[in-house]
Every structure is written in structure tokens, then in C-alpha cells.
Image (cartoon, rainbow, N blue to C red):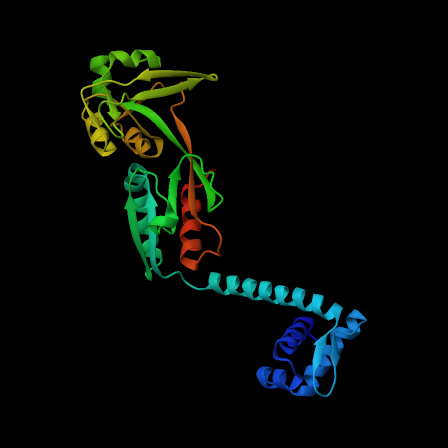
Length: 297
């Protein structure tokens, strides 16, 4: 006999209170129900049920065995559900949140490719740079730059978010090429203003374990990095931006990396979703696709 089936029959017998009720519920004869229970008792070498013509009750071993069987059968159902879900296609609306610059330049093109791949999916993409609580605001998947220390979230690491300094060939020809971070003080820096123009913008660089910090000043600041990128390409200064975005501009010759011997600021990046329950097919699919696209090498 199949042991899992016998366990399921035994659990149902405990819950329904009679072999006849189990037989009706599971579509088998009362005699077959009895055979399943006897099979388990023979395997274990002990009685699981006290049975009389009027009632049945669990033995001490039967009570402990029932608890474990019930738990095991739930795990089996969950495993089969996962397998079935993975075979099904993701569909429905998925609410996603990401940082503004990464979202606009890198994530948005990825999302359109994902939608082409899964025509039954819809993505509600929100971009901002403020701290977002996915549980309070209803986001199912988030990309977060920075450390994640929250037991209520499942976090998968992506490639680090690296910043590099760049300027146009025309600007560097006119103003010269800075050799050290300190020399940036003599240049127009296109600074990203997070909150207020009154807050100084400081750029950090490191080499050989030594960190050098410089205050970035210039004629243009903005809370939209797209504006700074445009200004850098037009020759108005040096910008500090995400390597993943700037690499295309560097390869096209529109920008040149400066201070290549120094490491710019680097922060961890993760794709996260709420913990505590098994993720849906759409969440699993989207998270896995992000890991494949932006995961660390």
C-alpha cells in the first residue's frame, strides 16, 4: 500500500470519527479504510486507534502520530502546489517600487521586455527615492539600494550599485582632466540634490583602502539625474552617476570616465518582497527575472 495514502486515510478517520464516514468522503469501502489503518499499525507495531462497535478513540501513540501525519500531509500538498504553480504562467497585476534613477534607466527597459514575455502580466511601477514600507503601501516587489536588515522581508542580492565620475570630451579638453578627487574642487560638478539645495553634496572616492571625500560644487544641481546626464553630455561639468547607465554613454564616446584609478561610491542592491507567506507565481517569476538580469556575477 502507499504509505502517504494510508496516512491520509488515518488522518481523515480521526477527523470524521468513523470508517464509514471516511469511506464515503474518500470514495472507498469501509473495509479498505480499515486495511489502510491496519497497514500503518503493522508498520509501527502498535495500535493507533481504540475501536469498538460504537466509537473509536486515539491511543497515545496514535495521537502523536496523527499530529505528525497531518503536518507531513500539509507539507506534501504545499510541495505539489509549488510544482504546479511553477508550471503555470504568471498573470495579474504586480505592484513594483524602485529608486528613481535605476528604475527609469535600467528597470523600465527590463519591465517592457518582461511584459513582452508574459502577455498576461500587468506591472504597476512606482519610482521614487524615499524609504518605502512595502507592507504599508502594498508593494509586492521592490528594488532597494542599501542594506536590508528587516526580518519581515526576503532579500536577494543584486550586482552592487556603483557610481562613477564622467565628463564629456569637450569639457575635459577645455578644463583639463582631474587626476585626484581633490582636483574636483577646481571643476564644475553636476551634483545630485536629494532634498534641499542648502545641504552640501559630498562625493567619496577610495583607493588602496583610503577614502577621500570632496564637496561637489558647480553651477547646476538637480534632483533628477537625467537632467545632470544631459548637462554632462553637453559639456557643462563632471557628473557622478550609476555605472550601469553611464557605460553606454562611455562606449558611444559621449562621455569619458574620470578618476579611473579610484573607486566611486558603491552600495549593495537587493530585490525584496514581504516574507511570511509563499510568494505567488507572478512574484516568483518577476523576482527570478530580475536576479537573472541584474544579479551579481
